[in-house]
Image (spheres, rainbow, N blue to C red):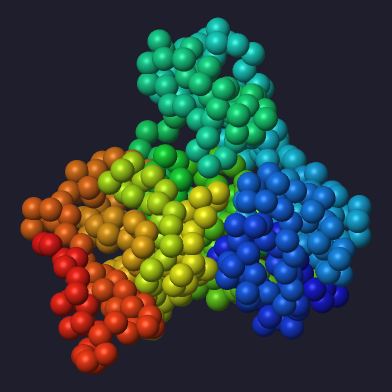
Length: 502
């Protein structure tokens, strides 16, 4: 039985995995780069080991350092979280070679589903519908042009080893094929070390729907229903919800059975996600499989009532699933917003820096999966996500209202965030009515980037007041310069500084 787990990751997902470990009576081990020495996951873990300098390739992607930390700590297992080494078949194999349990699928499943061309071939053999396109690597620009003519534009040229929107190019006209092919290959080799690309038909008005699955070592495979992930920017998800406003019971049942069929085709073990593209007329196609825990897994946990990390660990221990498909149901509605340290008005550029003040929302039906605190410096080296904010309600209307309230209460100073941008999404008619697809942000760009009614992008007064109070408190711990006056921090600060010029 697993008694100690090393979490080969950082930030909020590391803390989230460790929380489940603590509830299970399992000790947790953190690994950290020099940039993360003061990170929350290091403080929360039972043990922590340095694995290298800030760059990911020298720390969180350093297999030797992570394996060394696992051995030094006596960890029975390694949980990879998501990103970094979570879908690295060589790392999974290395763990097994070292006698360490990898909390995830075996190398075969990772390799098969990690290569999009092989995954398409596998799904076709299994009878799972896939988007029309090639099942082999494109040889050159001429072949890409010929296939685009056969399929008919628009088409997508995509990296076979890709993910996160990298190595993808939309082609709307045949004269764009050559440049799109070259750019996709160039980006693929830089991002993944593999320039293999393929081509598939582009579905107009696509909806991105994914199904969470769990599979044990005893032949049991179940799904935990769908997540709607169509609100994206640059092919990266921003908001997720479940149940999907697009779905109906018949489609949900059929797609769920198809997701289970896809997992069985690769003899999958553990938690994974089958992603689909769904058209406006509810035709669906296999897109890809993520052989790991997803960033958006909390909405599934909230609606279905299953701790996915605990189930991952239980499966890794060799236990059968404790429930059958007919035991599971969706209760209420859940929405997740990804809070980033970024500037939406500057093309969503990352905005690392020191958190001066933070007030997280609380109350019924809310969950904050985060890792930052006052005084923490968000590093420049990693993804700028700060928190995953999750709301739940008896109905979708209540879940939206609760999320709006939570975003209003969420206050952060020191770095720019996308909180106000997310608030605007919650107020957008297409979102409120549940009538949106992956073009949502571009279709509502004018509203989402509009200035406030006052004519300028006003700072929230509560944030300003909190920052003033923070500065005042910082001054109050310095040696007093005025011994004859012991007034309040607010009055003292207002007299000696003139920082508000509205």
